[in-house]
Image 1 (cartoon, helix red, strand yellow):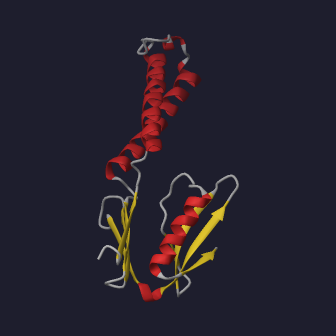
Image 2: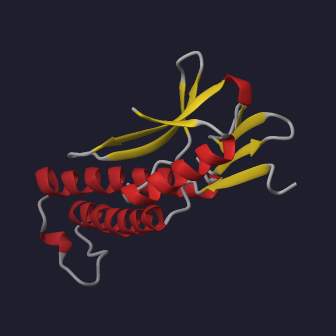
Image 3: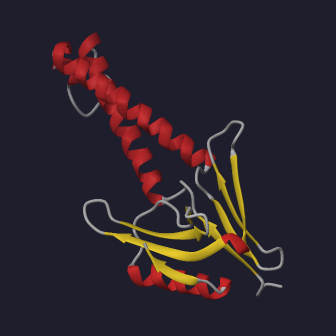
Length: 181
């Protein structure tokens, strides 16, 4: 039965980079916010610097703005980590003749994203590689009605050899062709 069903786990937002940026932005934003408050109240809230010497307008207010912005982004990233946005799995089931794509979204009515496609509607497995300033390397499920469903998670680009190996294994498992998009 395991030879008829293949399940690929997808890592969501619980990645090292998100933990790093959440901590970095939280600490930095808190420091900037305290520096702005120190300049307003003329009380030193930061033990390692003398921020009360800053003039509130314009330096202190800008520090508070940057601190608030940084803390807001930190809260957003922390919530995406907590909710594990984007995690899920891709299941290819030859017994039921279905492809199931499951992802977690933001809380609400559509928290679980559940897509199913019959294997008879799948035309090929597509690979798209684009280099440059924002490189992407993605596997697609190409359907007969010209839709392309991405199968790889949003992450740092993986090496081309690993992507080609994954695509070849999946195409071989599903008895499909590979396409270069």
